Length: 359
Image 1: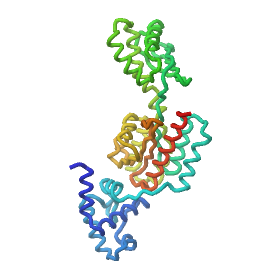
Image 2 (image 1 turned 90 degrees about the horizontal axis):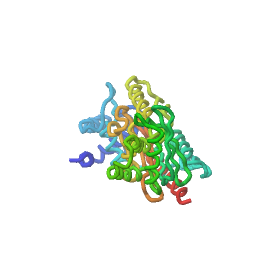
Image 3 (image 1 turned 45 degrees about the horizontal axis):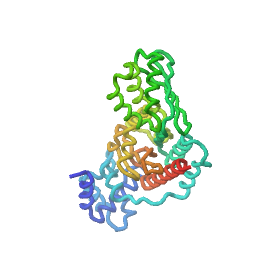
C-alpha cells in the first residue's frame, strides 16, 4: 500500500468528531507552536462535549499516530504523519491576501533590471512576507553559444570565456587537467567552436561526447582531456554559489530556545551554506506542476533540520521548468497562507521571464 493510500485509509477511519478535533489541534499548533489541550478544544468545538470526551478522542488520534504528547503535557501536537494528513486532506488553501500580493508585485520593479537582480528581490520579499528562509533557484543561461575561448591563469587555474548568441558573456574559472599547454587549449577551443554554433551548453555536451568517440584520433590527448573535463565543469560551474539564492536564514532562529532546535537549525544552516544537492532541489519540482510540500524527513534536502519546504517550479514561454521558488521553515509553517504565496510568486516569475524571452 502506498503512503497516499495509507493516509486515505487513515482519513476514512475518522468520524466527524475525530476530524474536527484533529483539525483544531493541528490549526492550534500551527498558530501558537504550543501543545493544544482538551479544555482549550472544548471551548472551540462546534459540538458541545466534555473535556473528558475530547481527551478520549485525542488518545484515539494518538493511537493512530496522528498526534503526539510532548514532555508530560496533557496537550497534543501533530506528528509528521498527522501534518501530512492535514496538508493532504484537511488544509484549505485560499487566495493570496491582497497585502501579500502587493508586496510580491512590487519586487517586479520596472521590468528592466536583469533576471538575477529580480530573483534576488523576489527571495528577499518571500523571506520577509513568510518570516521563513526563502530559496530561489535561478535559470541556467540557455542561449546558443557563439564562441568559446580558454585562457591559462596558472598551472592549476584556467578561465573559459563563453560568448552567447544573445551577447551574454560568462567568464568561469576552473581547474584544468594537469599538463595543459597554450597549444592544447587552442586546439580544445577550436574543436569546440567547430561544433558549438547554434547549440546551448547542454546540447553541446551531448554532441561533443559523441564526436570524441568517433574522432578520437583527430584531437590531441591533452585537448581531449580539457574538453571532456571542461564540459562537466562549465555546465555546473558557479552553480553552487550562483544558482541558489538563499535569503532570511535569521528567521529560522526566531523563537528557538531548546538546544535540540538549535542543533537542527545549525544542520540546516550548514546545508544552505554549502548549497548542496541543488540538482536534487530542481528535481523535486520537475515531478509535476504546482506547489509541493515536504514535511520533516520527507524533505530529502534538509532532512536533519526537522524543517518543512514549500516549493513550486516556474516555467518559460515553452512551458519548460527552468527554476523554482520556495520557503523553508519549521514544520509548523502556516501552510494555508504560504502555499498560495509560493504558487503566486512562481507563476509571476515565470510570466515575467517568458515575456522577456518573447521580447
